Length: 193
Ligand code: GRF
Image (tube, rainbow, N blue to C red):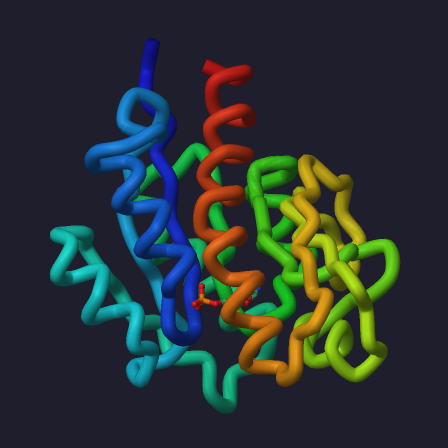
């Protein structure tokens, strides 16, 4: 049984990335995958330091001012030597071009903090709060050429009753993201081993 090789792409805090790395080191992902690289499009991403502290190699490919396809080709080149089986997006704030999607067809996975059938794009928790949702639904899905339109792999409800602020909504949702993402990845990778 070969462990899947994964690369995690981030742009910011990287709390989902850290949760996944920890599960590969000492948790439910231990026997199913290995994080070969954490890649960010921003030097300022806090998650880079976290990944370093967890002992995972990091790379930055700055995206600022770059044309989308050229950027994606650059990232593909950087990823090449790591030979990832899967690309795991964890707060990567860029839309991937068809060039990238086709290179890893059906092997790119994302977590979205809302039901992708109801809300796409940035600000899922803000949307849930502003609309007074009593619950929201975290979605893990394959990435296709649209924005948050790919096939849903798994969803998990978050109880938002009585939440008074966006911060409270996030504080309820994020811990659920952290455990749920690894659970879904485990299923996906185990089935394909
Ligand atoms: C998460 O809410 C995730 O669902 C969304 O972006 C956020 C990333 O947070 N795609 P973090 O960088 O993992 O802390």
